[in-house]
Length: 517
Image (tube, rainbow, N blue to C red; front, side, top):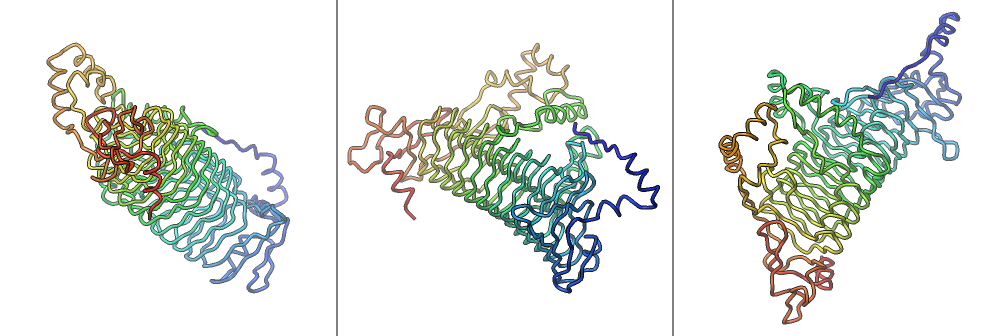
């Protein structure tokens, strides 16, 4: 895991000898600091922040300015760049570089780097370049790099992060926890562990997953599920999200009414690799806590996805994004309901659009092409996952994918289908060995599993219009269009189960209908 050491003994000895402190020297600036509202000048940024009143503007140039800085009044902190070089705030690997505790704060034209870092992979949030816990902040034209988290937003509402470069931070570039009405717009977010993450603000900073074998921990987890503040009404728009490790944009834990629009998300899991060693450590920690083997807390099929929404994200819109050249899936939807995926361009991923255990979603007018395995895929390798149901897919254009369309939701499983999953089940190894050797016990267990796995039905047309498949849009492929309206009178069977598109379209017709208002 990441560890940082500071060889400071010689420097500390010098400071003590002259009667100074580390803070005195660390905060000394090479450029001017002034309160543009009052005209007062300062030698230390902390003094300028402490002396400011509501509505004041603090301007700084030069730098770097070392230390941890706190804004607890409604002010503007403005860097005065020299050419393209922004003034730098440097946290010296301790704490958060800048903490915003007052509403209505504006921070602009600064570089913030080198926050403290913590090794625990189960931390939900921690030290950051900027940490915000107040309403209505605006962060503009910042450069955040080399921090544990880039920006952490804890609760509150109505803040904006815009036109900033957020790159090479150890964990999330931007992490929103339990926020409302925040806007993330026009940023460039590169090579972080995850680009943008939206989650609930949980009651504890450390995930309880590391100690699930403890009954008290399980009780706290249940309480947290009831008490955690959900994220709502978040806008993520016009960002370039490139080369992040695990996911480009992700939202989870009962987040509601999100809008993820007009983003360019690419090279996830490629420019920066997913931290496989850390993932393995997390899996082993959970398994050890439970005394089990074969426990999975991270879906391996989701890693490297451009856009990933999971765990009860609802009533949200994913629209007009370009998600391409990702190691995993372009847009992945897991255990999330009543969302709309519309007019996205999803190309050159492992799979284009992938859905697991989700219901009542609308997938419409997407261009899904040249994905290696699947274009649109419903149902994954985990046969124990509840099938997706009642989703509508229409006016999507699928071409040059490994398999254009796949839907296993309607498949009726047998105990023979499930025999291979015994090794993946969260049971002690002794129990697994008994199941492998005792057919009657195995059959009884698997019958119980099957009783809870009800087949699902999804609609691949809306009753009038279906989708276009480039392997089923010509007469030689079974496409029958006797009246020349661009719609086949013959249906198209979807691979994987029992689903049928009853009204397949040709290329000209899907393009015309998709372009209509």
